[in-house]
Image 1 (cartoon, rainbow, N blue to C red):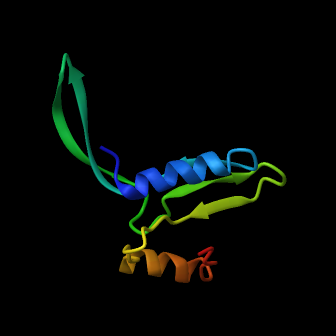
Image 2: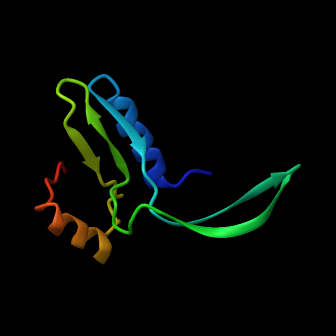
Length: 96
């Protein structure tokens, strides 16, 4: 079952699909391995992107400018890593 933030991300991607190309950009550690039948073997942790990276990344179709969107539920709070990333990027523009 998809999390609330995943469902919101999908709704955003659909709503902006005419004007933006967006993809989910999961950050953190994941396990990858080799699929043998229905099993994964040789699992190893793999780091993907950097902690604090926004949930959706892509570009605007009209001019190719980069788009970064962080998705939070009403109860969601930004992590320290996200706040640091926003500081590096020059602040965030809150749409809500």
